[in-house]
Amino acid sequence: MVHLGPKRPQHRKGTFTDVPEQWMEQLHEIENLLTVSAETLRTITTHFVSELEKGLSKAGGNIPMIPAWVMDTPTGKETGDYLAIDLGGTNLRVVLVRLAGDCTFDTTQSKFALPESFRTGSADQLFDFIADSLAKFVEEQYPEGCSEPLPLGFTFSYPCSQSKINSGILQRWTKGFDIDNVEGHDVVPMLQASIKKVGVPIDVVALINDTTGTLVASMYTDPEAKMGLIFGTGCNGAYYDVVGDIPKLEGKFPSDIPATSLMAINCEYGAFDNEHAVLPRTKYDVQIDAESPRPGQQSFEKMISGYYLGEVLRLVLLDLAEEKGLFFKGQDLSKLHKPFIMDTSFPAHIEDDPFENLSDVQELFDTVLGIQVTLPERKVIRRLAELIGERSARLSVCGIAAICKKRNYKKAHCAADGSVYNKYPQFKERAAKALRDIFEWTEDEDPVVIIPAEDGSGVGAAVIAALTEKRLANGLSVGLE
Ligand code: BGC
Image (cartoon, rainbow, N blue to C red; front, side):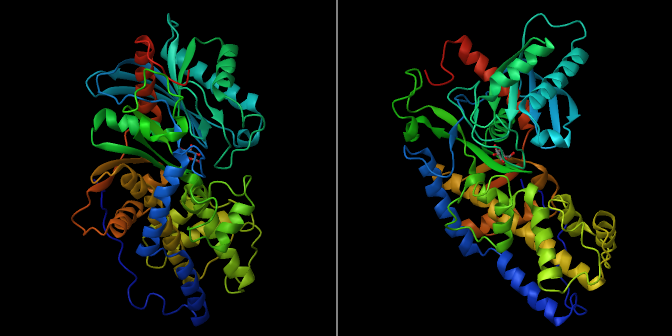
């Protein structure tokens, strides 16, 4: 169920009385730019459904719709010890998962901070770092050594084309990663080669997207789970589709995979609307895209995901300060000029400020940007943060609604994870409201609910590795022949 927290009081009449008229005009303009009506959400969703279809078609489309070669759904009876790793934006997480076989599991995990420079360093540096961290973890967990190679589920949350479960050719980096000589290559042998260097017996059984992991982990404990979603640094969703409804693989499936069987699809719908047909992009979104390492890619993600929300706010503030000459008069704005200086926690903290005089906002601006903000400025800034957060939540659910429409789900548990979903104030409530707007439900209906996911990159990766081992043991295919 969506957990509804206490409702934030609406702006009381008079909140903006000390805000100059000219500022209010600007604020209204920005409100118009960033507000997404119910009607627009419905138009976007309709287009989204056709784009999901297009991604599965022979001709293909913007949304990659990657068959993930996870063809079984978990029963909860899977057992065994599995290693899982998850390369996030700031950390590498290594997990040992013990599947108990009764829908329960045990996890032990360590986190290794990924040095910032590695995001744009070399491929060897990245994969050696992963292998070294794995070696440290395995030494701790198995001080006596291990007799058999440990099966590993590798959660790699970037778009990879997969012709089988234990391979994935990186299509392109997202979320600010930019490492040469990885795009266009299979990342599994790269990892396996680095693991060989550290001499630890590990077998990479499955390459998994975080959304597929989230989906499978949640199904392990909740049979109603229909999709796995990440609303975090990036955004994406996975669901199961019918093999016979994947025209782009028609005639290519191995004979033991009937047209009626199911296949997890990693949508990679952060790429939705790369052709800019329906999303209400603002000049700020256009600028973020133009200045990103991959212009023209991940259009949807760049408007809604955590990597970009602080950046949208920064550009709006610069506009108000320099273009419009309204804000931060006479202050040193050099820090505000630094791209990505404000991560998502910045607008999140602004919205969370509990004080009437928004003193937390002042403290934040002073500490991070060296800017003193007047009370009227703080009030406008708070409103901007609300608008950015609300736009993100509302647009985010178009992917959910589109999958429901495509699969004709009238009821669904949509398992979600990620920093924006878990930590961004009001995200859950706003997302639930936006779903109601799209489907025109009343408040007490909510047949499609967003629920907190099980740990996809740990448990999900482990369950997928277990399902894969079982298929292999039964002589079933795990990819194209
Ligand atoms: C990646 C996806 C991933 C999503 C959430 C996107 O940038 O392309 O593979 O699932 O972020 O982590």
